[in-house]
Image (cartoon, rainbow, N blue to C red; front, top):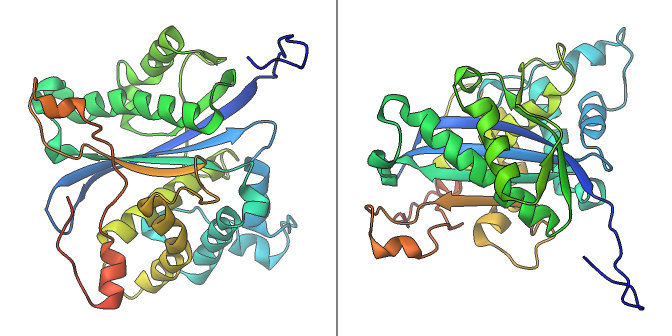
Length: 307
């Protein structure tokens, strides 16, 4: 806790946050064939709300339901299903918002964790429920890392954790276990006992706009890493990848003086395949550098894989 000039402790106001989450399963590396899972988090500081801004960007401030533009801007956004100019334009406005620090600096916090499933030791996880066992453990560690990195030693109150509705909802532990374990071990406080699962459709629940945004950020990141398969409609995602690419390059290069530093992060784990008891496990197995297949395809030059 900080102190004033007279040595008196200054009681700082806590930071109250909402967390939105989504995942991508079983993406295969174009170079190595390794299987990857990705966890995506968006953190909203409730005192600097993100949701209203994202809705504003979606509709360009035009909320007249009788307007033809309202329909154009009211599509459900799912990265892999972007197939027309209207959907591309919504997503592009969101990306341009993220890229503009004057708009997003105090509002948009994001962390993507890529897990090299081919390097994880199967013996350390539930053999009968392999994905959920891994996801539960790494989701918890991703939450802790994101919160501590974004907000340092400030007192944190998590108002809600939202996740896209999916198989995790039915899991015995996932809806509550991460909250229980983090509150038991960390100086992080929760006003929720379980994760709230949201539908994909923002017309059903307006908060799903941020689930859709999380999907798009995850989607563009993994598409730049793994490349975009050519099709009649891939041009829309390629234009969006070009828009987001400068940001991702800064994250991959881990640029220390980046305006996104400690606010937008992408990391990968583990760097090496190890067995239980291997001393290599004491090394930092997180890293940021990956080859970008999309960039190499555009340049016509492919490099040897780093990992």
